[in-house]
Every structure is written in structure tokens, then in C-alpha cells.
Image (cartoon, rainbow, N blue to C red; front, side):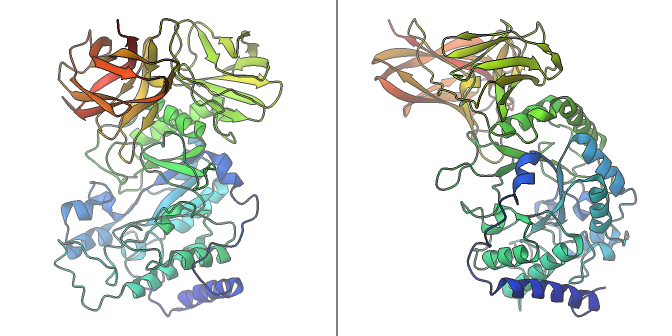
Length: 582
């Protein structure tokens, strides 16, 4: 057992105290201005690996197991005492991370259950009390350093074990609140954070569990200032500060991709990182999970996020014996194989210069080169780069950089001719080298020559929030929004009309197994309700009228929202078409 007062604790407190003293008194202010390049490595990294691991893996019902199953503290201690990851191999984890192409790793040092997977001087509820009895973070830090991969630590402010943490859950009748002091708990948390920085020198501190207290109660600004004084290059996420806009080094949307990236309060682009699970339920190991995101889908998710200026932090939950399960390892290796060919289109790139592309694809940028990630091979074997004013010098596939592609100017657009088939169905990258810095005229959705307004899903902004399920996929010759289960996921289009008129609204979709799902089309606030009808097949869309709308000249907004699902699905949506009424 190690408790405050032993020599290790005194040494760490002395180190932290000296650093804090050098920084001056703590107060509700931002950390000192960072060096200009402090964030650069993270900005260029684009792809990180998240690891949720702790004693909850023994239960195999994800990291919230104690809360979900309402396990009394004494019963939960069994798992803390018997945690014994005998197959944990930090070198193997580092080798897998390197093979996957990730540029940094973040692991849970302490999750909500309060168990620390490192040797802490401030608690006996840590890895040293377990059957394993050895530090985890020290060897892992050494292995990642040897592999050249920065390592960061997740730290939960919420703590379901510490006697001073408040509030308790309603079902925790076995834990009295008598004598509990949240301020004393924050002393403990501060000491552990100092300990993590002093002992293991992390690149990132990734906070979570901040939602039960105010910034003042959990000393957010003082802790941030103290940590930056200890290590000025340390990166701290926004959750230390309750995700308040403008605070922290980067934003952290969870299990969803913001439609247009993340912005600061002044509208400027913000550094951000989307954390995503590889499975559908939970972050920690779940022995009952059988459904996982496919490798092509994860590659496209990486591309989607990077094209909007963010990083992907992709999660795995190792088994209780310390092994990363084969389902996860295989997907990581497949992403890594794709990155070996296409990494230059991901690492060190910036967000797309196109608001949208008229095909299923995304763009990333590096200097004078555009990288067009084609995720649905067009039937006519061409891609159109809309409004690209800068002249093109050459175009080629990253899978064959020595073989140029032909291109031509078509009015304000540039059209690139593709090979007959996609070398990589997940995402084939076309490099387009320009003669100067990219200049692009904004793309607007306007009526066709016959007055129709075509709204395919690849031109939509996909709005969502935590728990996103819907995503775009390509089905032979058409792109559809699929896996649509969450009513909070919906596509949204903005378009303009040059004159007033009435339009018939038609929706093209493939209905799922004959079930009747409910949905509505909302145009400028007017809602047209409908239910899905049978289509040619679950993958072949049909077109169905849902009503009429009258539109004036100018800008309009259209959304399609599901109101109920059938057979755990709504539809595979292809497009919405507005046809001038006769």
C-alpha cells in the first residue's frame, strides 16, 4: 500500500510545487501563451489510438459496467483485486499502433470506476493491489517512446470509488456521504495529475467525467495552469473546462462528426479530435459485442474527419488478459495498409477547399496539392472539381504516381478522367497538383435546366450528435445514406431558386425488408410526413412522392428526418428531388 506521506509522494509534490511556484499563483485564467509550434505535431498527426482498459474488462460489459449493473463497491473490489492481465505486452501494443499508422496513443489512466492502472502514491486502489501487481503506464510509456509514438493519458474527474467524491448515485446505498468532502477529493485528483506528469511525461492529458461540477468546483483553470507550468508542451483537451468554447487545446466531439468541423466562438477553425469506437456499444471490452465498423467504413471515417480539419482518435477496448482482440487488430492493420499508400493525403494535411463535391468523395490539402478521396467510383469515370480557379499542373492516383490522369477545364470546373475501376473501393486518392495556391469559387446547389432541384445525399451536410449511426456508403452505382437508426441523424441541404414556384417533392430510397418506417421532409420549416413504401430491393432505390411545397426565390433549407424505424432501420436514402409542379 502507498499512501500520502511516503518518500515518492513527497518527491512528486516537491517537483510539482516548484513548478507551480515558478508559474505564480493559480487563478481563473488561461495558461500562458504557448510556443507557436506547441500544437503543430498534433495538428499534423490526424490519426490516434484510444485505449479504454481497466478492471471493468473482467466483467466484459464495457467501462460503465458498475453503473449499468449497479454493482456494490465491495463486489466490484473483487475485480480490482483479481485483475491479472498476464498477456499484456507493451511492445506488442506499440508495434500494432505503428503498423496501424497512428501518430499518438491515449490510454485511460483512471476511468469513472476510480481504479488507477498505474502505481500511484495517493491510493491503494490501483494496479499494485491487483493480482497483476505491476505498473502498466511505465512499461507502456517506454515501449511507445521506443516506437516514436507520443503517449497521452485519459483521466476521469468523476470517481465512483473515492470516499470524498460527490454526488453519489441513487443506487449506491452501500456508500455513505457522511464526512465526504469534494474539495478533499480534488486535492487527491490534483496530486494524481501531478504524479502522472512527473512520472510518465505524457504528451496529452485527456479529461472526461467533468459534467457533474462547475469549473470552479473542479478547479479547472487552476489545474490547467499548474499542469502547463509543469510541462509547457503538454496538450489538454476541452473537457477539463466542461467543453466551454475556446478553452482547452482541442475540442472533442464524441462518436459523431460535426457537419462542418468545429469552430471557435469568433468563427475561426478550431483544432479538434473526434473520438470514435470501433464497435457500436461502449468503449471498454464487451465480450458480447459482435458488430463492428468495417475497415472501409473506418478508413472513410478517417477521411471524413480529416477533410473537415480534425483528428480521428479510434478506440479499442483490450481484453482482461491484456490482448487486443483480433477483430480490432485486423481493422487497425487494414487501415495501416491503406495509409502506407495514401498517408501523404492524410498526415499533415488541412481541410478541404471545397464546401462540397458533386460525387461521393472528400478533399484534403497540402500546399499546392489537392487530394481527392473518391469513395464512390462514378459511372462515367470522371470527377468534377467545382469552381476550381487555379490551373492544374498534373493529376495522378497515389496507387500509381507514375501514370498521369487526363484532365480538362469545363467552364469554371476541372474534370479529371479516372481509370475503368477503382484501385481501392474504400477510398482511392487522386492527387491534383496545382500551379498555385488553391482558389475555389463556392459551390451552390441550383436548379437544373429543366427547373428540377437534385439533392443527392453526397451533397448534404449530415447533422448528428453523440451516438451517430448513419453514414454514406456506395452501392454499385449509387451512393446512399445507410444504417439510419438514430432520429438525431439527418441530412440537410441548402439550395437556391431564382424564381418562385410550386414543387413536387420526391424521395428516392431503398426500403428495408418491407417495414414501414416514418419520416418527414422539412422544407423551410414546412413538414411533409410520410412512411416508407416497398422499393425494388433493400439496395435498389425507388422514387416516391410525398407532397408539394411552394418556394419563393432565394435560399432554402431542406432536411429529411426519420420519426420512427422499422426492423431497426429506416431506409437507405439516395436523394430528394424537387420537380416543378405542372
